[in-house]
Image (cartoon, rainbow, N blue to C red; front, side, top):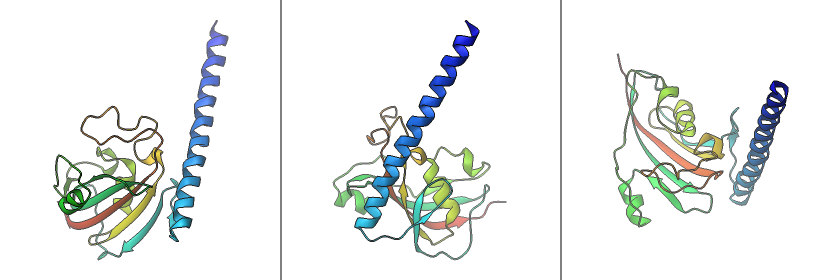
Amino acid sequence: MILSLIVFTTACTEEVLFDFEENLASELAEINAFLDTNNIVAEISDSELRYRITEQGNGIFADSRDSIFMNFQMYFLDSALVDSNIEEVLVRENAERGSTDPFVQFIQTEIEDLSLITCFEEGISLTSEGASIQMFVPSHLAYGSRGTNFNFLAPNIPPHTPLLVQIDVLRIVKGD
């Protein structure tokens, strides 16, 4: 009985890993096709995030004690707006959002412990104050295999959906 359970557990784990790799390969092919079609040259991080810094910052980077003011826009790869905290973008796209506040509180927490999706954490760590970054995000760095159907506050993002995310780091207030 115990041996059967171990074999079953191992088989299930291998299947999940295979599915992840297959989904990731498919999403990266979709992202790479988008980049090629739009003549975009992007860097690739260790996590498979494709990104480009569209505006250089002043060299002041955030750490775990800092507060960050940022704007963001999130799109599906077909250019449909998913979410933003920029009022003008929401009006232009005839979209709604609960808050257009550019403030993200980092005080007394590690960047990794925030409730931000992983691509936001990674994008913020790659940029400094005044910088803008455009990210082409595989789903494991965003909403993954669950999508946002579990979260009534988030827009509806299907599982395994790659996204385009633009972050503008407006200001970093250094903490103590």
